[in-house]
Length: 150
Image 1 (cartoon, helix red, strand yellow):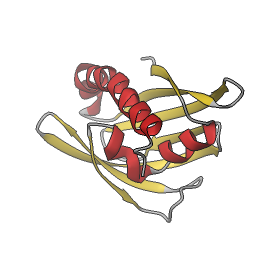
Image 2 (spheres, helix red, strand yellow; image 1 turned 120 degrees about the vertical axis):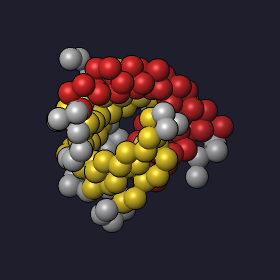
Image 3 (cartoon, rainbow, N blue to C red; image 1 turned 90 degrees about the vertical axis):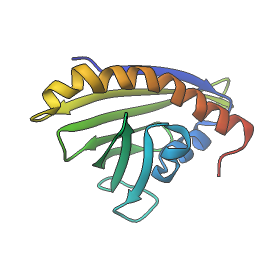
Image 4 (tube, rainbow, N blue to C red; image 1 turned 30 degrees about the horizontal axis):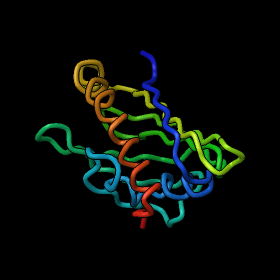
C-alpha cells in the first residue's frame, strides 16, 4: 500500500512551522482524532524521543507509542509507531517558498500492521486518515497564520 500524502502552503517561515508541528503537545490542537499526548521523553523532542498518542476513531480510543527516528530542523522529521496492531509511519517535510517567508508543508503517512491491524488498516484506518488529513492541515494553517499558536 502507498502512503497518504498531502501538502499545504502556510504563511509562516519554515522555522515557525517546524517548531510548532514537531511539538507533540500541539497535536490535539490541529488533529481532530488526537485526544491526548503524553511525552515519554524530555521536550523538546530529539532523535529517539518517544510520545504516547491517544487517538479516537469512532467510539474507540487507542494509544500508541511513537518514536522520532529522524529530525532535521527546519526541513524534515520522521516518526514511527513502535507498538500496537496499527503503527503509523509519518514523514514531514517543509520547503521554504517566497524567499523563506512562507512554507510548503508535506505530510506522508503510511502504516505497518500486525494481527488485527492487517484488516483495520485498509478497511478503517486509511479511509479515516484520507478524510481527516486535509482538514487537519487546514486547521494547522489557520492556527499558524492567525497567530493562535501557543
